[in-house]
Length: 290
Image 1 (spheres, one colour):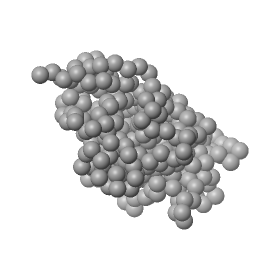
Image 2 (cartoon, rainbow, N blue to C red):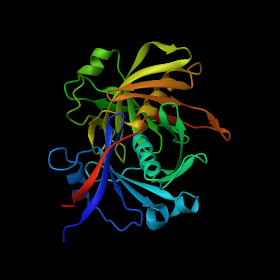
Image 3 (cartoon, helix red, strand yellow):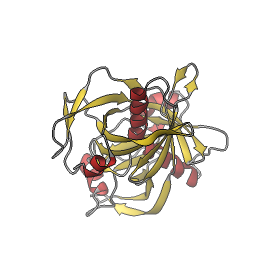
């Protein structure tokens, strides 16, 4: 029998999602069903699915539930594959929870379970801010080749709960001229693949103590998107790494879908990376699953 489910469409700086409420964890969406829902011609359209489920209701949420997180963000890429985290998605997820009164930020940070661990979200001047936790700079260099882009360029691996490779470009003309209709090739290919960010520093790089960059991104399992929250964080971290110890801890990152903020404060004795930006709910409806 066909199954009809409720949904809400939302986005964070143009990185858009189909939000499926499933608090009791009764849905078992197949990869094909996710892909159809995300299809921009035959479905609702989106870069991924956010299934809203109580952490205690699914096996993957057991650790999050034990850590005190009531809700788990089951994030799936547009091709149906599971992803560890989504920086824009978790803000949209929290916006949904607060709008339907399933959770509140009035009492302080809200803990959300993800496949990359529990993330905390608060309100910020840009909308919502998520603590992505510590990050890791990979030791080995990755070469990145784009279609029509000439010789491969070196990329820096940054892990912020999910894998990224960041490539520096010399100017905005090259950034705008990238052909990201085809997935860039990585060598060596990371075991779980990676999101790939292409960045150009602002001129000057730092203004009033805040660093600035522009970025485009090819998301693993999706394609080019207007924004990628964890990619924004990874890009800022990479440029900060290249700039050296005098680089600032606050960054402004412009993506095709808008502007996001990144900062790297010390939290309980170690550096964390925090991402801030808007989260918008567009419309709600019902859809029959294929």
